[in-house]
Length: 175
Image (cartoon, rainbow, N blue to C red; front, top):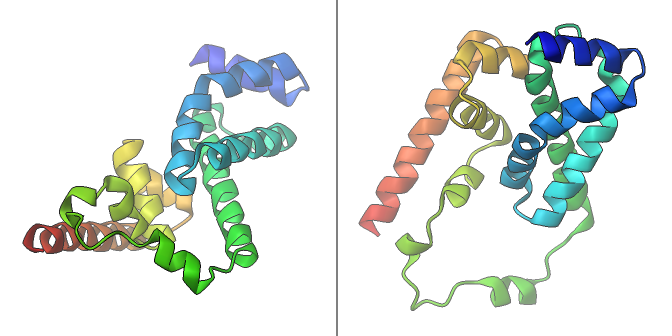
């Protein structure tokens, strides 16, 4: 941890090489996070790039070097959400496209069920809490702090999300 602390301090003092070394340590985690949200490699890479820009610009605001990874993940999630909102405003599906994307009726839907599809059925906050808790192995308290939510609210979100996931799996098993 001492190395991270020293690198953060150097980066906060304007050392670009120190920032680059720090960012590269967590780049794979940031990419995975972005990919879960974006669903496409190109978009995930754009999120990672935007995360690097925002983190470099705001590294001086990081108060606790031990939370660097959490801070970077939070920035990546924020960038992904911003991109999704922008995409939502820009893209309007035409009915003929929706028909082209529909699965043929002969395909077995339960086999098509993926973790990504399950998670996509959750609200943004539910998705955040599930990813932070189970993908990044944060405690509920740490996830609540990261999301700036009261602990009780974070617990409620997590249990509601897990309930939705269980229900989706049950429905697919019985379909």
